[in-house]
Image (cartoon, rainbow, N blue to C red; front, top):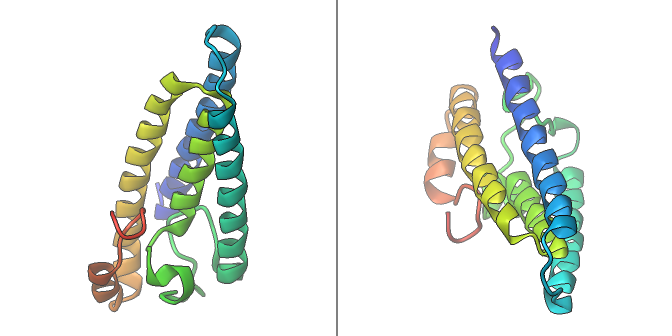
Length: 155
């Protein structure tokens, strides 16, 4: 199996996890009889909106080089400015914010376990992606040493 094919398998797993988080959150909301907390609901909506706005800004900033496949395109360039100055994988961060918003919107606290699994998956996927980036861009090593991976200023 080629690297590109393996990359698309990772993309498929990622979208399956996203689907599971949304569906499990909705079902948990429907099936678990708990008192609703409007404040938590509004925080969820806010996180979804902020995450979506950040996602769109990053997508516009990176442009035609963006792909969900962790294997970089032949014509890709190493981006280290803008949001990439603070975080190496900002798309993963925004997806985590959006999914946290979904869980909070539905107040589906058991579904936080799926969010933790998604975070672990992003660690694995980003490690694989960084292997490809190191092969393509020798300067990626110094960039990686000075920039956080998924969560700005933390990890």
